[in-house]
Image 1 (spheres, one colour):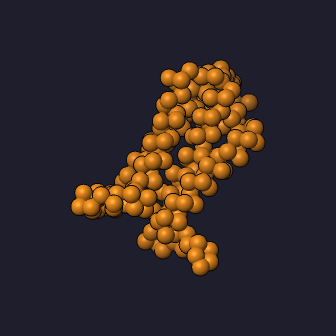
Image 2 (cartoon, one colour):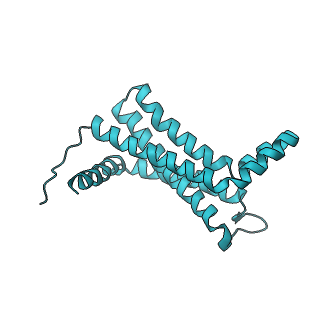
Length: 173
């Protein structure tokens, strides 16, 4: 249980270090809304014409939640990656994992929705096959992208704790 407590404290400490600055909170919120709103509009949860209307049918709740989770994790991971770039001057090799993971996670979550279907549909018969594949595997692909984003988040927390030499007392107070 002591290892679990240390691990939880490392995560809290890394989040506290990054989000002490209001700029990173703002960046995470901007990334969240920049990804979430277009995806909700494309997947027809958010309607903008003739007036703004938001509707999530109960059978589409897993799709809606996956979009929100992917958007939130992308905002979190990208803002933490920007922190590492700006303040820690980490090497390019170390930074690739955070940026690549967040791009892969967000891209996988976005491609299996309406964005991917719209882009693939221009390719004719091959596009129809790909559209069918993406539609049938939409939830599993989004779960994979959530897994990629969580893994990327955990790697960034580990790197921040190592690079910043964030130490804390394991003993109970």
